[in-house]
Length: 76
Image 1 (cartoon, one colour):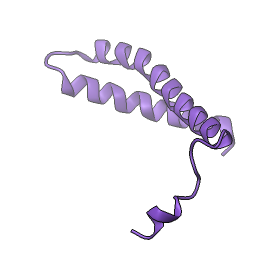
Image 2: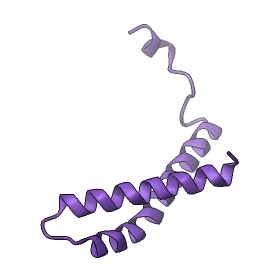
Image 3: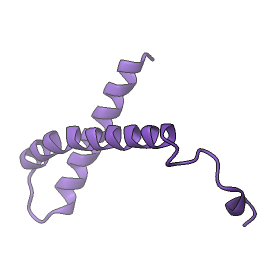
């Protein structure tokens, strides 16, 4: 699978999962409303994941976050 196919598969799986969760978690939400809300929430969730990944990469780059634990933490 190419990268864009994996990205599309992840987005579709997330969309389906969100639609099912919204449909069955709230009181009387129908399928139409659940699908529309999931359509709005899916890009937001994907963007939040991308933003978190990017901030972590920048923190590692700037030395604010260590890839390996500190020596004191390894002894625990």
